[in-house]
Image 1: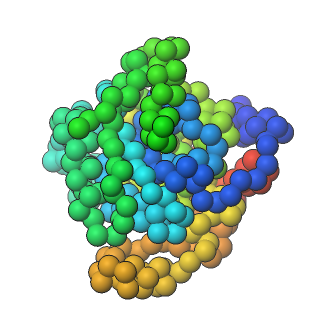
Image 2: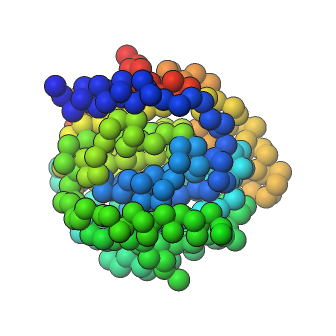
Length: 162
Length: 162
């Protein structure tokens, strides 16, 4: 059985005991921005219940134009008011520089990506960088309760960055 | 206790029984692209285990430049080879048009967003649209096993879009 087929079979089991519909707007008025890393099961690490919070994830959990798009829709159309930003230890984004990664892609494809890969060299600094990008953005109305964290993939523990 | 404080207390409980480190590259070589919607607990709906797959999420689960950035890093640096794309019923992206949302933001902030909100009017069509955007992108090397789905938020069930 392929990986995808295995997960589809798991979904049959999930649907069989599914507890029914919930409202579209997040119940706890929270949006979480974090990395795509496979070791971050956001619902488990925070004890989120289904329906509680928007979860926005990309490579690094960095704040890009698309993160701004998602947070703008989250707050303006779906009523969230709080943001938690979570980076993590042992992140893949710490393993390359943008210049070298773009050069590798150009060597392989003959096309240089017109976007920044957004690699970073210091975890806590990049949490603060991402928080600043949210605070200065004119389209995200509610940034007063924004908080930033690092998730330790070896201990499972969150530590706030201030 | 604030929402964030409550989740941080939940995290203490999580860390207390944490089962220890896993490798950085996703064990099942899979990347999942889906919506930020609060009702989609990706690990639960697919029976994912911690460490199995990258999870990329934004408003709509649409394929933007940032999604391409994340998938490129996922495949080229962290060894994933498969992609599952998941949209869902009752999606917020079905409730507005880009023009009207941009006009509302401009009326409020006096600044017109320079990005597309990416609202859509037909769920299955947008799954296919997102799949096409992945297939034609020159930077994502492995698109042969790409599959697209709709998650039904009322039943918990995934249906493939072909």
